[in-house]
Length: 281
Image (cartoon, rainbow, N blue to C red; front, top):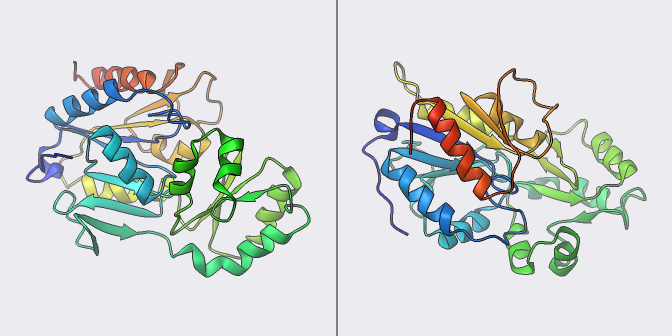
């Protein structure tokens, strides 16, 4: 993967695009072609516009995605807000290194909560009603979510978070009650419950604090598809929701809604958002 490292994006960047990935940039099933998206990402970079994923995906999932796109993200946030990765010199984090990236961790390892996680697994409300992502058979997860087994295995390599796949209300209620006196947050989506110490809200605020410098704020476009992405959208100049339904959960007065399917909808949404801030393709 080739990339051009700006002298300092904080001083030279034209805009930053913070985006969720699953069902926003790409279908969660990963079944679509990425040719148009690959080409579009290259054009954005040429114009000084960087895309920064803020996602529940793991480090290895992002690595796989970058290989598939033949595109190296200069920065990205993994596991729902638990760690910010930045190409060395891009945001000048000054934190520990992982390969070519500097890393800022916002969560402790999920392993320190193993006793609580096991308690959830064994509770009668959840036993047989919930699948713990990191412990379940990949084939079973694939069957439920419609995601290829090899990608499920990548999603299981979690460092900071755990996911219980369940739509069973008593199980979700038990998870909420058992975590009340811990540092773990609960992020609920339609089919899953994410457990982690940070969230996309905190990660977005931290990221923008690193990007923006005194006297120069870079235009921010944020894209998401559900309530878990509200933290991305809230701090964006142009919030964009990729959804066929109206987003009653988003309280900001202004937002753009694109009721189509990714990745074509993502490309269309970004072009529209950029035109609002005076950038045209």
